[in-house]
Each structure stands twice: as structure tokens, then as C-alpha cells.
Image (cartoon, rainbow, N blue to C red; front, top):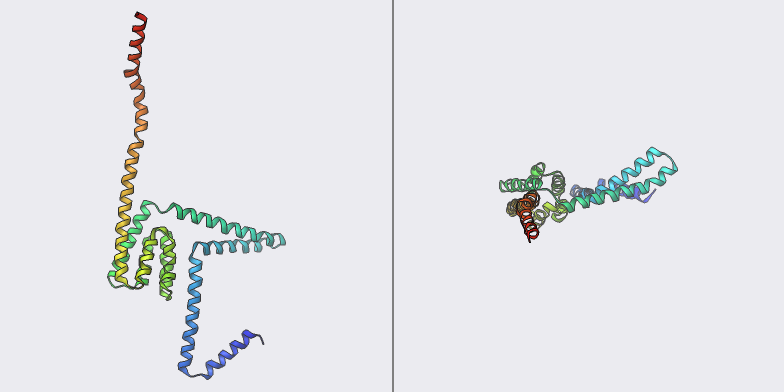
Length: 247
């Protein structure tokens, strides 16, 4: 009998022999350990690195299954690693580019809705899950992951990690970690975030309009340049040439 089978047999005997309160405590401990394990697995799979690793492993498995040869087995590892690296590069490029103005306004609306849900007395996990659908796709996925982790009882720092990985919602995640499960404090932080996002988008739009006004002067200058040469410079040159011929 293997060690694992022996441990399982002893555990079964213990469950039959010990009293009911002890059984309940043992089940609670085992369920807590299982929940923590599931929390860790979910948290790791929701990160960009976790998704890239799953995609790389899937490509490797598909290569082996479709090829069904030694060559496919050898090629599966580099193909899986190449897929992982490509997805990580794409993820980092998207993170560096940041969301557009429209997406940021949607994030501000999501923050306002989150503040309204929390102010109405809704629990933090339920509030996050309720407003996730109003956010852009990456932020919505992160919010749903956070809601699931909070519902499973994860620590605030671990539960809000997917939201903190998004550049647009990192501030909200940090505020949520600071306030822990206090819905009222998080409501104020969400409202402040929405106001700052809208102000930043308005400032950027005004700056872009001013930049466009400056850049448009170059084509207009080129359009008026022939007229300036014909009406301003050319008569002066002709006049000077005429005087030189006279003298």
C-alpha cells in the first residue's frame, strides 16, 4: 500500500471514529485548505503570465496530438515557448499603450456605478461583479476575477491583484487594499477616481485640440506661400531689376 493510500485510509477511519464536532472542524480545515488552493490557482491563471502559460501549453499539446510523431514531440516545446513569449510581448505592449479616451470614460462610469452600489449597502464582491459588465474588456475580466476571489475569501491584496495589474484601475485596487472590506471608504475612492479620470480625459482632449491648431498652420502657410511670393516678393525683385537696367 502506498503512502497516499495509507494516509487516505487513516483519514477515513478517523472520520468514522472521532466525534461529530471534531469531524466538522476537520472538514472546515480541509475545505479552507482547498479554498486557498483554488484561490491561488485562479489568481495565477487570471494574470497575463498565467494566460500566456496556458496558451503555450495548449499549443504544445495540440502539436503533439496532431503530429503523433517524435518530430511533433520535439517541436511542441519550442512552439509552446514561442507562443508564451509572443503573448507576453503583446500583453506588455497593450499595457504600455494604455486605454483610449473612450475606454477611460467607460472606466470612470464603472467607478461611479461601483460607488453607487457600495453606498446603497451592497457587499464589495457583489458590487464589483455587478459593475464589471460596464467596463472595457480587459478591466471587466479583471473585475470579475477580483469578485470571484473576494467571494472565495481571498486576502484583499491577492483578490485585487488582477485589477491592480490593469494600468487604468491600479489606483482603485490600491485604494481597495487600503480600505480592506470597508465599502463606504472604497465608495469615496471610486468617486474620486472617476472625477480624476474625467478631468484627465478633458485635459488631454483640450491639449490635442491646441496641438491640432498649431499643426494646421503649416499646410495653411504652404497654401499662402505662392500668393505671398507673387504679390510681395516678386514685385520687389522686378522693381529692383528694372532700376538696375535703367542705371
